[in-house]
Amino acid sequence: MKFLKNTLMFLGVIFVVSTLIFAVQNTTAENQSSVKELEDQIKDSGYKVKAIEIPEDLNFAGEDVPFDDPEIMERVDREFLVNTYWQSNALLLMKRANKYFPIIEPILAKNGIPDDFKYLAVAESGLDNVVSPAGAAGFWQIMKTTGREYGLEVNDNVDERYHIEKATEVACNYLKKSKEKFGTWTLAAASYNAGSYGIQKYMNAQEVDAYYDLLLGQETGRYVFRILAIKEILSHPSKYGFDIAKEDMYTQVPTFKVEVDVPVTNFADFAKQYEINYKILKRHNPWLREPNLNNNSRKKYIIEIPNKGYYKVSK
Image 1 (cartoon, rainbow, N blue to C red):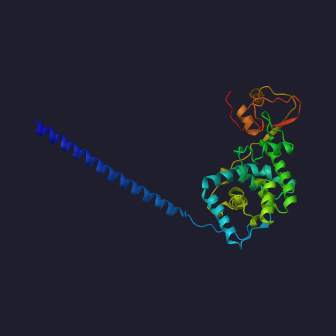
Image 2 (cartoon, rainbow, N blue to C red):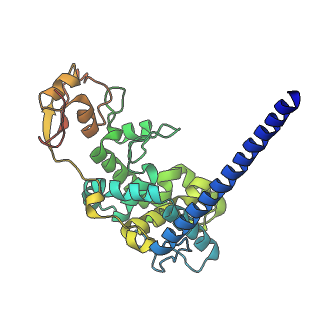
Image 3 (cartoon, rainbow, N blue to C red):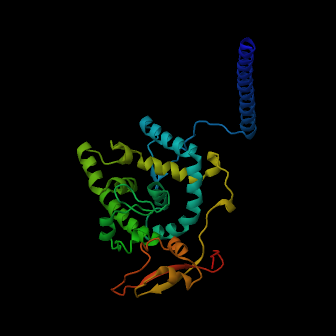
């Protein structure tokens, strides 16, 4: 009886081990088949990871990049590779650019700022209302003190750094001053990242007067090169392997303006007057930071309200 029991146990172990071996072999075969199938799909699609051909006429705001400097070209190449092959991010930037560039472009033009600076906003924030670890906020990543210095209202209730038009005006004024001080748009762009004092300090210490001759920190050292890559990729997406249809782009929802010169105790109730909800109101007016507006001074604010029919709001 004991012999029979041991025999059955032995046969059971053999069966389990055999089953596991078969399963592993079968899974390996299936995985190999899946990999082969994926390889065939990639081959048929023509997709290849390859070196990027850098355009020889690359410039920022009409100021040429020194192509005869191999160190400069390596830095340019790095940003083209990083931004081309981070495909998901590049696609997202293209979609957002289609939505927000029509707002930014005329403000730049009105202020005499080269159109290329719209790509600076992309480099700063990805065209998203983010807040940096240092406290810079909005599309143009403006610090509180800088915003107030240039006339923005910045407090817990209202923060106009998140107001795309007003923040763009501030960026224009800052860039114009930087251009007057440093003489080139490239240095003006660098100063937007490192600060006017920071760039001047580097220039004085190194006794050079061109951005491409400066040895800068990691972030500012890559800054203009990143803008150059973003500009080129977003301007010629198909050249860099991106296939994005017009209907895939993000677009602005048409709005009308409502002037408010009194306190608003509850923006949820305010929104209902226009058949929207608080979330939608905030989406179009991110500079309104709280669910109410204090406005004890009776200041005039312009609030954007989306046209009817673009949002479905539950009753």
